[in-house]
Structures are given as structure tokens and as C-alpha cells.
Amino acid sequence: MPINIPQALDRLCYRFPNMLVDAILEHEPGRRLVAVKNVTVNEEFFQGHFPGAPLLPAVLMVESLSQAAAILVRDAEATPRTHVYLRGVNGAKFRRQVVPGDRLRLEITMGRRRGSVAFAQASAFVDEQLATECELVLGVVSDAATIHPSANVDPRARIGEGTTVGPNATIGPNVTIGPRCRIGASAVVDGWTEIGEGTEIYPFASIGLTPQDLKYKGEPTRLVIGTHNVFREFVTIHRGTAGGGGITEIGDHNVFMAYVHIAHDCHVGHHTIFGNMATLGGHVHVED
Image (cartoon, rainbow, N blue to C red; front, top):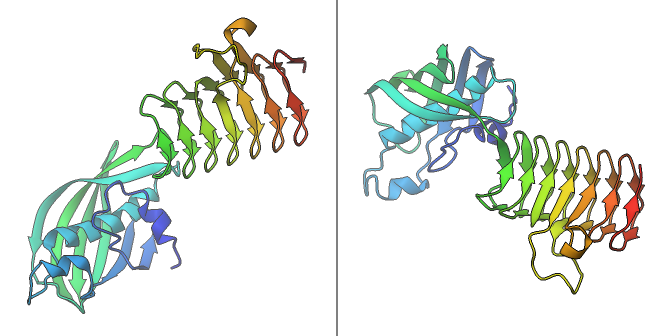
């Protein structure tokens, strides 16, 4: 049956050394799954395991089974941000060597579930010969946020549950982002900045950076943004200055179209729309 294998395997926390499931043959959601791994001689682990007599390492057979099991475990999860990782292996038995040219059939049957721990019976076959069998112990965790591997997120930043941070985005150490926000590719959020729930920041926006006031000397001034705002591409929002009260504020449910600039110490209310390239100088108040 058709299935997005890379997306499904992204739920597995550990995938070393690479993707070890090539296709799904049978899928009974939440109950049973049959997948295949085509074992080819050009896979890098064969270079040292073993020279002149290549064998698929037993640990990689287990890894193939755990990747297939991750797809099956995911069927029962309500949130797309749930990940699955291997916690243990019970009663593993290896019956047959697996060599280049073999087609490894992976059969998974779901077992019992105890809270965040799932159990699955797993077997691998070459043709009709059993190669390995075991019980997999799988941990199921719901991530607080989805952060792209290329994003630069300071570990001190606080990212809310369900928030997505895109490729090459940068988030500074004093930033707090609420739940279910979306930070686009190459966006920058820095400074003492607070962003409310459901806010969307599009690619290349710059939120919370240093104000363009020559009197600013690096004080820890703030930017506070409410909920469900939209900041389109290349929007710039600067935080406050000590002389202007120390805070820039944005209310709820506002839309800032591309290239809008909101300067230091501005205060914007709720349900406003700023057209493309609109600009507010410092200390401006805009009502609802």
C-alpha cells in the first residue's frame, strides 16, 4: 500500500546508520505490518563486516525491525509530533546469516501497550527462512516542538508545545515562543522577546532585534507579541528602548504584510492589518 516512508520513519528518534526500510507490502493499521529491506553490497557497513565475507550485522536487522515497528506504533497516536524510539529487545534469536542480494521481509505484530511503552513481536525472513525474531520494546514520546535540524535554536530559549521551527531559523537565548506557533525558514527571533500562541512568522522575518535608536546601549528591553499574529516575509519588529518605556507591544490577531517595519517602543492593538511596506517610526501607538 502507498505510504510516505521518510515521513513515517521521521517518528523514530534513532535511525543510525540510515533508513533500513525500502517498501511496505502489507499494513493493517495498529495491528500488523509487513515491510522489506533490500540488502545490497554497496552499503557502507559491509566494508568492515566482514572484508571478503560481507554479512548484515545482527544489530541492523533489529534496527530494520524497529523502524518498521515505528510506523505501526504511530497508527495509534493522535498527534503528528509523536516520535518512537527503541528502548529494548527481548528474547532475540538469530537463525540465519543475511548477505548482499537477500531480500529481508520484516513482519511486525503489535502487542500490549503500557502508557508510553509499546511492545511488538518482530520477525525477519529471507524467502521462507526465519533470519531473526524478537520482542521490541518501544518508547513513545510527544515532542514539545518540531525543530528542523538546520535551525539554530539556543538551548535556553523556551519553545511551546506543537511549535514548528523551519530550516536555518535562528532563535536567541531570551526568547519565549508559545504553543502551536510556526517559525519559517531563515527567520530570526532574538532579544527579550515573548510570542503568544498560534503566531506565524514567515521566512526571512526579523523579530525582536536591537532598535535603530542611537541612544540604545544594549539594555535588556523587551518585545511582547500577543496571540495569533501573522508576520509575513521580511517583516522587522524591534524591541523597546530604556527612554521609551523599554517595551514594544503587539496585540492579538494582527496581520503584518511583507516588508512592514515596526520600530522601537511602538504599541499596536488588536485586529489590525498593515499593508505591504507600511512603516511605524518609534513611539507610535495604533489602536484596535
